[in-house]
Amino acid sequence: MYQEPIFLTPVFQERIWGGQKLQTEFNYEIPFEHTGEAWVISAHPNGPSIIKNGALKGESLKEAWEQHGDLFNRKTTNDEAFPLLIKILDANDDLSVQVHPDDKYAREVENQPYGKTECWYVLSADDDAQIIFGHHANTHDELKQMIADGEWDNLLRRVPVKEGDFVYVPSGTIHAIGKGIVILETQQSSDITYRVYDYNRTDAQGNTRELHLNAATDVTTVPHETPNVDQLEEIDAGLTAKRLVKETYFTVYHWNLDGVVEKERVVDFLQISVVKGQAEITVKGNVFTINKGENFIIPATVDHYRLEGQAEFIVSYPS
Image 1 (cartoon, rainbow, N blue to C red):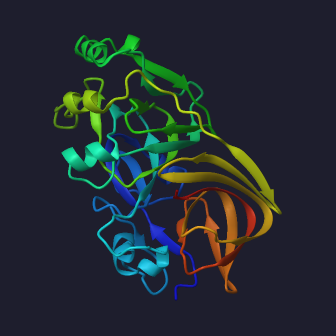
Image 2: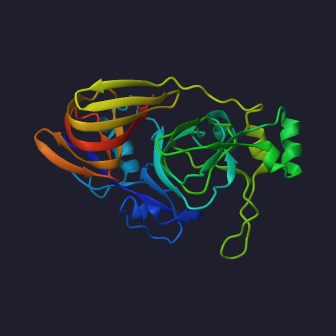
């Protein structure tokens, strides 16, 4: 029985808009000059994380999910995919304006198990940082016409953000992360993106990136809907836990640890990313030091653990 956290090695993705902050802020050894994404807890075939410790050291999280269902309290043995994907993104430049499909469209059109509902916790942001979140079109015809006419300033909703902000982005929401923002993203385990606009920029070979306007307009929610999230805060000894969102696909918390707390695992498994500070986690008398940038899973085989230190975490699990 796996009586310890499952620590994971990130997988890095080169992006035209990426930078160096995943190295300077998280001490990751990034492989690209423009490193845009660290897939820090991933079982997606396009970038599965590798387990760093224990009996499964060297295996991918995807393999562990498929072959060791007891770690996740899997109720079935069918071909369901690992449900969530956690990323840290460095937006050194504006990301493309994009939208993602829901489960139904992903399965029927893309033959993929999940659409993509996501959420963002802002880890850092420049003073003038903005995101694009939604649009001003009232009908699909109006949406298509404004896109065709390039009326981006009139079409797109721009929202300022700062460190500590949280944004819930359901499938069907036109969105983009703006320049100067680093976020932790919790999402369904999907890699389906439909680009709407990419600022007419080119890659190193002088090529523009593909747009997906038909699919994008098919899946966009019109008119835009800004979701309401029911947040709450609980204090347990040295831990302040703020629930950021509890929705169909995931529940996400921000934990602020200042001292010591004893925790019981009450869900099938927990995904934890250390976003500030340093702490220790103790399981069955074994102590593990956890620093900023560390990402791990509390599996179903661990019932109790202890946290001690001064640190902040983003914690999630499938709803």
